[in-house]
Length: 80
Image (cartoon, rainbow, N blue to C red):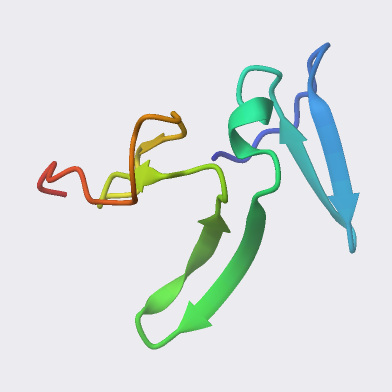
């Protein structure tokens, strides 16, 4: 996820409550149905993403697996 003000052909644009999210055509199938929220808590502030397609994710938050053979969610042990 990054801030960008460029929209390319094939991108999906979702706008809600004045917030515009641009999703590239490669990523769209992997994040379809995801919920993005901004959380400000004692542990810090930032965006969180709940992706119902992720059956296994990296504990550092940099990758996830949406494959049918991945089993259940678990950390990747990448050390981050």
